[in-house]
Length: 251
Image (cartoon, rainbow, N blue to C red; front, side, top):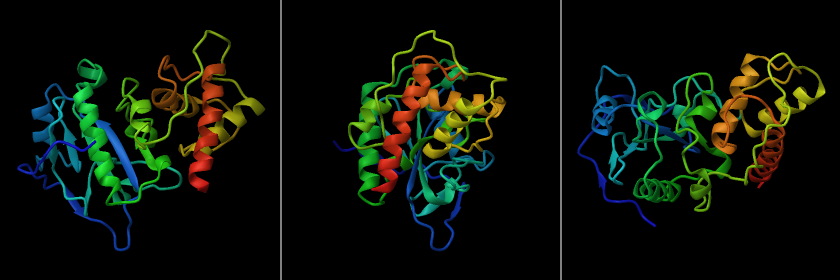
């Protein structure tokens, strides 16, 4: 599978030099979260926005390159993943056109995801990006971002080597850990999240930040029900995700 022809007619001025010696070893997937895909593309190219991405993929599968991969695009913002605090310097950013939760979130068309998969695979041919470093914007900035959200087909992408996936445990309405809980079970939950890569310090207290990070985990790996509560389905899925991440990182 290969991406559609890449349109390079649009260029964003919102980029800079990567730090000397930096290596591209992360891929961050976003949705645009704007009413129109053309408006999103133009905003990413507008110097007033101070944001950009290397690529944007329209719903019909058209791919536009806005920033050369050699440059540092401004897409992740304040972020953290597995100890890395400047994702922009070490990543490629792909914006996927979708109105997002604010303007009518909807499933991503097959032709769009096919183009995303082809684009990612072409990026992997140029940069070594391990599966555990293919992330959602919401993974690396859970307090600020929701994208690409619970409708993004991570399982489909993982089948082509883009990110990691485990089948989520079915959701039920069993009792869950939540705000105000504390103790060893909460500590283990936080350790699992930290082991996957999230920005969380295990302290045994289920506080608002823990709820935020659990919600981000659910958006990516247990999307059937996103509420920030650590129900048995979330905990079971989380443990298996942590295992595959440990295996990937140790490979």
